[in-house]
Image (cartoon, rainbow, N blue to C red; front, side, top):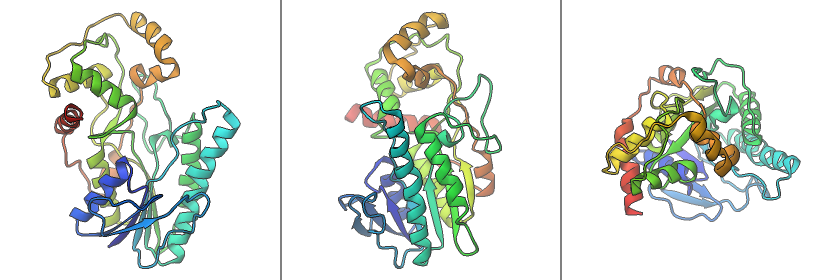
Length: 311
């Protein structure tokens, strides 16, 4: 297959291009600058897709994978502007791209969505599934849900539209919260997380890329959570990161209020990324596409920490 990937120079986009190349596909890497991406047979410089969404050349493309997205918030804290910006980039744009791909003969379009389209958090003991009623709580999540629903309406015979909803993705070169936790683990710093009984879902970037390949191999329409392991507590995750970095157990058990109060003072709302629950079940995707994760969690964390140590 000839597969065009938008956002191909990004963290997940690069992994998808590499996975597609290993699988024998002809990978077309599309990014703003058109920079070379390992595994890409062709590159396209899209420029600003918001200004010119029809800049991509879909001729001869069998399927598209849309990775480009807006994930940050506006710096001035303007909630209305932030909502509108996410809507334009994360909802309107993928629909325009999917229509262009379909009109040029593509047989499938895969949207890299997010579990945030369903929920950013779960209740203690709850595991969110594809069957749950969506309750997005952020501009990003609301825009992703709007895109998933609008894209679903484009599906027809001969043109499958699939929205994949991974949780937080990690791997070599990861940024954001996971990168900070991995860096602290590399230093071997003790953290008072033992009293936090939460459950969070994560997915290794290579496994998400392989899930995209499974979707391309059996084009089916629908929206699917994609996970590669059971939910894990932040304490258990940090222990695994410490072990991968060559350290012993340095997780202290401290009563939750004594951790949560100072953590909230330091992190604000971001404290939930460390202490909150966000558990998701990707079993429906695995059953539908007969897929299982290629890289086990412990190996994925080792690869991530090895890259962190070398960085």
